[in-house]
Structures are given as C-alpha cells and as structure tokens.
Image 1 (spheres, rainbow, N blue to C red):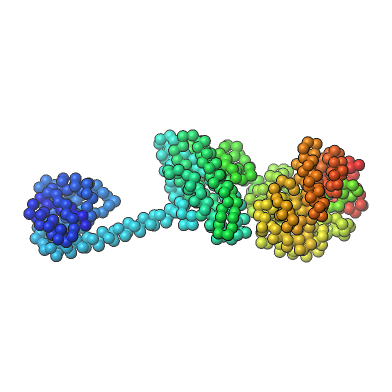
Image 2 (tube, helix red, strand yellow; image 1 turned 30 degrees about the vertical axis):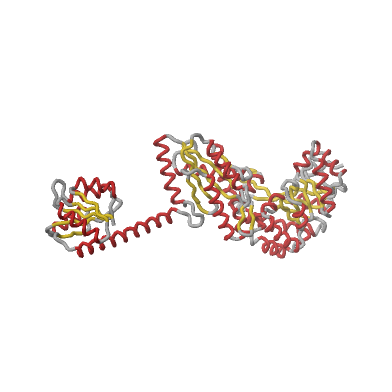
Length: 569
C-alpha cells in the first residue's frame, strides 16, 4: 500500500516510515497538515496515518480538509495520539477518521491496524464495483447491449437542459424495424432477438462518439444526436442508417432483408420538452411508415394534424362493427364478350355518423396497423359466406371474391375460422375466391405460401390482385396455387399511352399458365375494346358497373339480367 504518514515530530515520523518499509509498504511523509494536503493531491495514497497533535493545523482539521477534497473517494485514516479518550475517539470519528493508534505502539500493532484498513478498503472496492455493475444493468438493455428507456429519459433531460442553456440544436430519432412482427411469427422469437442485436450494432456503427442510442422496447430504438450545426445533419445520419440496413441480415441459417422507418424531431423546432420531442419523433416515424417504409421523415405541423386525424379514425373504427357502420358493396365481374355477370368482388365500406363515408384506402391501413383487421375481416368473411350461399341457390356458376391481407392470413385463427364459417353457412368452397395483392404476398412469401396451399386444398380459388406492381418472381407465381390474375387498374388507365406491352404480357402469361385474367378499372370504351382484342376474358370497372348493393345483385341473378347501367356493346 501507498501510505501517507503525517507527524510534526521527525523521530516518530521516521520510525513509522521504517516500520512500514519492513512490512512491504511505501511511505510518503509530511511534517504538517498543509504539506499533507499538498502531497495528498499529488500521490493519492491508499491509507493515511495522521498525528492528532501538531503545530498549526491539528490532525482533526487536516482530516476534514482531506475529506472535502475527495468526498466520493473514501481513503482510510488512522489517527496517532499519545492519549486516547472517549471524547478524542468521538472527535476523530466525526472528523472523518476510521481508527486510532496510541503512541507508543509496537510494529505488530501497526501491522494489524493496516491489515484491518486493507480489508475495509477491499470491501469498499467490491462495493464500488457492485454499484457500478448495478448502474450499468439499470441503464442497459440486456438483449442488445445499448442503453434502455430509463437511461434515455435521463439523457434527454440533460440534453434539453444543456441545449436550452447554450442555445444549441439536437435531434431525436425514432427508428422502427419494418415488418418485425412477421419475423417473429415466421422465424420465431430467437431469430427476432438476433435481428434486434444486429440492428443495435448497425445503429451504433452509424453514430458519432457523442451520440446516444437506446432500445425503447420491442423493435423500436431511439437515437439522440448532439451538437448539430443544422437539422440537415440528422437527415444525413438517417440516410446512413437506411443505407446500412439495406444489406441483408445474416442470422444463423436465415438471410433477412429488413428496412427501417425513421422519424426525426429537432430541438427546439419540434418541441422544447421531453414529452413533445418523443411524441413528435414518434409521429414522424409513423409518417415514414405511411409513405411506404424504408425512409425518414422530419416532424412537421402537418404530421401532427394527420396523426390527430388518424387517432380520431382509429377510435371511431373500434366501434364501427358494434354500431353497424360497416357494409359491403359488390362490383360485378363480367365476361367481356358475352356480357354475362360471372361473379362479383366484395368491397368493404364504412359510413360514420360524424366522419361520413371514409375511403377504404384510409381506414384499411389503420385497421391493419391497429390490429382491428382480424375482427373486421372475420365479420366480412362470415357475411360473404352467407351471401354466397344465397346466390348459389340461384346461380351455381356465380363466384364471390374478397380481399384479405397477409396480416389476416398469418393469424393462427384465420384458417380454423374460415373452415368453421363455411361449415356453419354451408358455403361450397367453389363459390369463394380470396384475393391478395402481389405486394402483400411478397411481404411474407414463405408463411403466406403455406397458408394459401392449405386454403387451396379446401377448394377455394386464389386470386393475385394488382398483378404487375409487386415485383414477384415467376418461380413464386408457379409455386402459388392461384387460379386468377387481376391486371392492376394503373395499367388499364395507361392503355392509351405506354402500358400495352405489360397488359399483353400479363394476358399471355395468364393464358399460358391456365389462369383466369381479370382486368380491373375499365372506365372507357377504348379500354374495353383493347382488352377484348387482346383476348382478356373478364373485367370489372365503372364503365361496366359501379359497385352495387346485395339487393340489386340479387335481382340481377334472379332475373338473369344483363347489367342495364353498362354501355358494353
């Protein structure tokens, strides 16, 4: 040990120093309190042996001064005194001392006192290390090794205080992994955990030394970017994160392509307190998701407005089924040559007493994000089955199709519910056709393919909606048990310009694979004639018929009428 010996008597000071050397310790000596304080600052000893009675500053006063210098680092102090009374002991302890050594003393007594102090010092070091470890554990996310929500809350308060004081800019980034739930559902939680760990490493790699990253929970991370000269720097770092995430994640035997959505809120532009900064970064992140994911968005007041509108819609949608605000219209599907109605597509609609008619393009994504889609989807499925059974008795060739999302398909309860509803309503499988968009299939191709094969085994037809927009491969198309391709209406709209090649290709592809081809969104005579000429058998769209109520469809089937509102020639 390195021991500071303080005594104004040369004899005693030298005796103690010699004894300490024999015991294997290093002695540093001082002849008064002021000298002891200066030496203490330079050498930082492990133990102090301090004479009580000295000229000038006495030992008690010296001890108090030493404790003030390092209040958080307790160095043991042994007082030296010729006479030790109860009052002396009390005064010494109050001054910061730990033990007394009475003059004269033996070398054995000195060694025993030092050993006792060594034990105290060792226990104290262990306590410091334990406290440090506990502090790390309390501030660190155990799965990823980055900071946790608790530490994020501490740091953002400090950043706000510092930025307010120095009038500087910093940014909060909220980062959400796109389609993370699907990873857990398809590959299992262990793979999801590996993904989170790798994502945390990539985020850390993108940041500067003085930046901060925390896992807020689930698949959501938060980053604090300090000391920004301009808000643009936050966007540059967000671009870097997106670029790093564009590389495949190799997780044991799995190779996953996972993107991220990033929301940015800058202090003080997007808020001057913790709650508003967090909320606005979160809102901006959801805006990034609504724009197709794999991008970043700065928070704006327009985002706030849209977020509030979304909350209102979501709250209203929760009670839409209970209030019977949801209803279904049916858009006829016609044979383009015979003009016969061969089926219809079920279209979900929502009319709220306050909001009025809400577009499916608006409320369906909200239903999917909020988890309401499964309950709504079950209601639609049951209604469709009941309707299909009624129409089957009047027209055995009539097929009813409905859209389902990949979120519904990968729900464990979907397939059992479908089978139960079909049995309960006595719906022949041949009457139903389930439509999935090409994009939703590509989102979870493995799990969706598995469920579709089981649905196909029940005798239900599968249709790929919006075909040509989702970049699916031909090998996937050959593996899927689909019976129908629906040409996306964006291609039909472009017939007069440059979309003819795509339409020709889809029709040829469908015919070569033995699939039905339905053209969506037919709105003009020119489009209709073109599709007829190219051999497209089926179609739907406002030029042929707008979506109709079940009662009108029922009348058309019952009386075997052609659709009178159409201008088909």
